[in-house]
Length: 252
Image 1: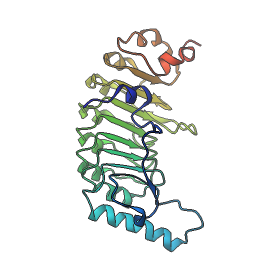
Image 2: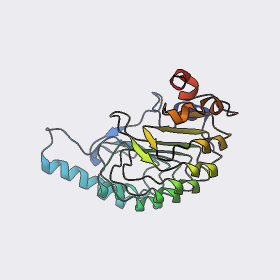
Image 3: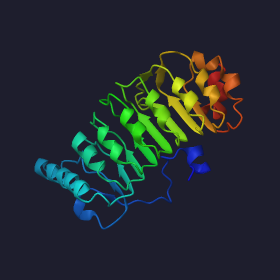
């Protein structure tokens, strides 16, 4: 199965109103759903410290002991390392969305070999994306604010990937550094590429010219991009993204 045109145009992670998913805090609220939004950390003052710890521990235990439960999980609050590793026990997951977390080691993610879609946000302590490259079924990948990672070359192993976003924290904004994007030459199947709030150390954006299947392209408005803008928009299938929607950003 390929990503739909809607997923390419808006991003596979975009939330549409018709995609209702139940939102819970405690395990006791779970009632057999295969898809769930779990916000079990960063709880307000209505929860005492002991309650907060109990709620987190119960989810960690449940996720570990019931590994065939979920196909889609969304975590909208902080995900610590121990919770991340428990999530990675859910071997039937197809879609995983983590807004942000204090995780540093992604190695357990290789258990999620059925994963099609992965949004992994604000992992400022992560030191390598190599574990993600083992997820050979991935169709969509969003990696945000991995401050300690400058080498993304291992992602070229993801031969089924159609949508790739690498970015810093756009809210700050906070920029990350990426050494080079030569790995894109081996990812000609990509239909979506977004590379914002990133400082490209090499300054060489030319590997993007190999992506003849790109339908959406968004790049920061930088002098190195402006130099080749007129050629980038000639990519044969390009129809969406900042280069198309806001061409004025690249002509100043």
